[in-house]
Image 1 (tube, rainbow, N blue to C red):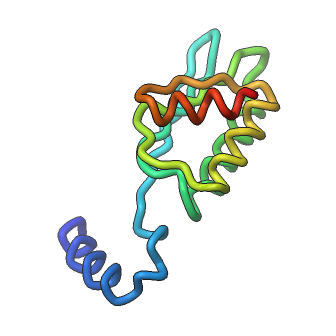
Image 2 (tube, rainbow, N blue to C red):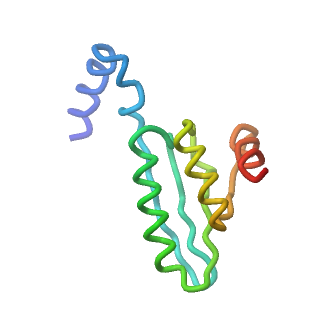
Length: 113
């Protein structure tokens, strides 16, 4: 299946450049322990994937039971405007962030203002 996807993705990207965001991938992993729930975000937080993170975040909030919520952006490669807005909303609702690299650290600093 992966090989077929690769063969389809390249021609589609060339044929439909206006679809630039939909081929980006995002992996969301949830890690839980007694003290926190951590959402690990890997890839591009952009386009339709922002809604996926929002749904995962809302489900995680429903089962926090006094634990803190952390959003791990150390594997995040890009954040679009909608992703930025969602991260800002998550921060307003109490989420804490892990980030590495100058771009993600600057983004988190801006979100916390």
